[in-house]
Image 1 (spheres, rainbow, N blue to C red):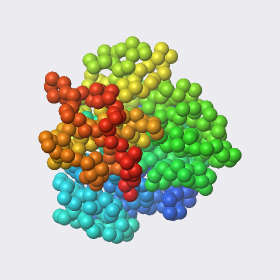
Image 2: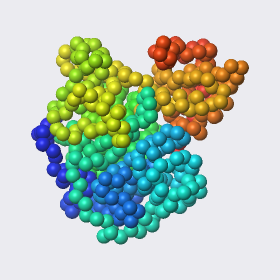
Image 3: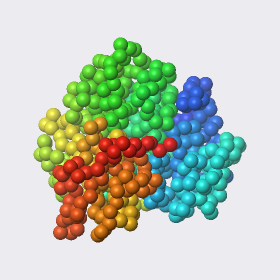
Image 4: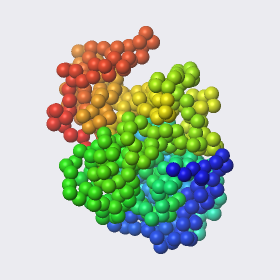
Length: 537
């Protein structure tokens, strides 16, 4: 892996800032395909530039300027790219939450963003109705249906405000590498979700750490990770940097994965969570290796990456990162140690420490803390949360909140979150947010959400609930109450009723005791009951 791109100086804006990269690519390779969409539509680099300029003009007409925030609640697709590119062309910031969110969790992110203008898919409008939208008073709707739209907001449509705008009306803004490109929302492990500020330098270094010497302009990247996730936005931004192509899907589909790879000639993809294991566990076929794919990035690794590589004819790699970082830990190609997430890359310093920031010996688990040689490589803080920012960036180091261990050879091994995140099929789930909805039921007195091991890998969500005196609550009825109040992946699989939760003297729930109990004989299992919770559309 070459590191000649990395030094302590900032990258040039033409190499790191989306606006300036896209202008350069559209001048160099205007007719080359940049994005292929699920419906068969295609954007060349010239098309992408034209759509960006029109969206920028439309946002300008709605009062958006440099430094403003645009709230984007959209699935993967052309309208997300229009909103993203248009905002960035103005020097504005995109704040995009998980589209599965609803209720109090969604309201928190709307008001936290401070955005006055949003771009929202028509099918999500009713989720905003009844919420306190804070400063949000203008919504550009993706689609024609505005039924269920919140009262008191001015509605526009993408077709008119973006597609029909005069690109000449957009101001020509110079955007610098240290400016903010995204606010990417964290899962909120023990409290409300935070918005990680992502600079262009951070995005550039995230791309180069994994793309340099591995990805070229001849590659086609299959992107099925949501664009509101750093794993999705990084791919689109990165392929623009490389002058390559992206196949943009709305979601990962196991049953058609290889057909999609072959149809589009995709050479690279990323597999997050258990999706790689689904491919690994599929029955072998004679044509498994007959595909154009050459490089797969996965986190975590499958059980046997060497066999996976040989079976499908691909190279495999893994890494460690988060929205606040630029991938500080990376594995070599085709790693043989399936438990390690890799070694520290150049440009970063790392320590594993105890609760008082004292370094622990190799082999012991502790919190991973980091700092970078290049300014702006690590997120400068959490949006409008100065106390959370100070806590995470204390003593001159960024505190990841993750427990890792390191061996004497420099290999890093992920152990757990310091706090109470639940990891289910690639999604980080806030136990705090799940518990808020559990406690909203009038018959519930106390509740805790924990993760328990899942047969599919990672975890399933378990709710441990204390009912009010004399109350009864059928688990299936409880589930029906919870379903419209939270994202599909947050809905508990298991519900266990107990007389009381174990508490510390300071009244904090001792979740480690609940995790130790796990799925007990009196625990209700929705899957055993035949109840299927489907993905939100």
